[in-house]
Amino acid sequence: MHKAALLQQKSRIVRYSKRFRVKPGHKVKLADIDPDFHSTHEDEAAAKGEIVTNQEKLRALQYRMYAENKRSLLVCLQAMDAGGKDGTVQHVMAGMNPQGCRVQAFKTPSAEEAAHDFLWRVHKAVGPKGTVTVFNRSHYEDVLVVRVHKLVPKKVWSRRYDYINDFEKELTDSGTHILKFFLHISKEEQLIRFKERLNDPTKQWKISESDYLEREFWDDYMKAYEDALRECSTDAAPWFIIPSNHKWFRNLAVSQILVEHLEALKMEFPKPTVDLKRIRREYHRAEKEEHKRR
Ligand code: AMP
Ligand code: MG
Image (cartoon, rainbow, N blue to C red; front, side, top):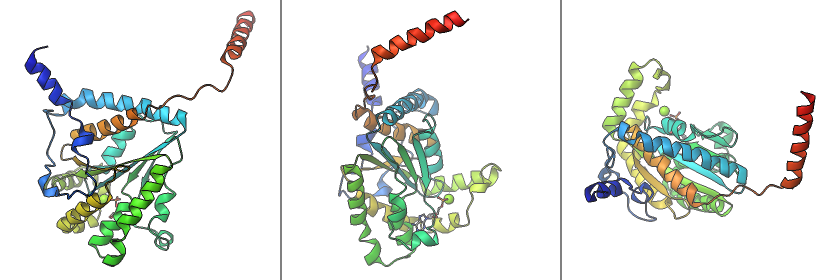
């Protein structure tokens, strides 16, 4: 291959898992991260092939996880309103077998939920071994919206980073793989998406009174996100900041990171529990009888 072509190909194999991962304890400055970033891909058409391949791989990997029944995957999605959480859920799960995956959305806590500790509703939403769970919002709301709107005093929410890290450690120690994605959009892009929602009758149902109210707290949210990402990105349960102004790039990056993580697990199909030789003989006998019957 021509040297320039080789170089170009090499630059395309960007490992987003490394590039977008928040290093534990490292300061995060969201204003310095370009939400428009789309790597070497010109546009959606150029990335399409890779996106489809990732989706196919995800399908096969989820099947293996289900068959293996040894561990589980938990994907946490956080973003500002219109940040693309729903779209990412749809994309990530598109090829998966519904038997073995679930989505859990976290809304304002119900009276019963609010009467418990903040992790109560979260812990029971984590799927069992063999399954993939996607959180659309998560326990991180308890250090984001709760902090921004002063729903509890600082001394309460500031302790939650440690509680979250302990909780996630306990999960990962028990075989749950946790990958957390912050879908990073710009304030301008949010307004563009709000406009789309307003003008598209199939999207109007998504509009919420709180959309514009929360937008006014944008800077406070960015600060709360920066702290949460720094405090709670661990080796066991990393945070990734995904540039998400381009929906297709977001899908590409998230799916690539998931594929890479799941492939590294080297999941195996369980060995058959039956004697295959004997079952094969049974099959041939049944086949013969079927021929006779016809
Ligand atoms: P959406 O995901 O757009 O349907 O909205 C769900 C709403 O629930 C958002 O405004 C969240 O901020 C809010 N929410 C989720 N979890 C919590 C929580 N723990 N405390 C307060 N509000 C929450
Ligand atoms: Mg909303």
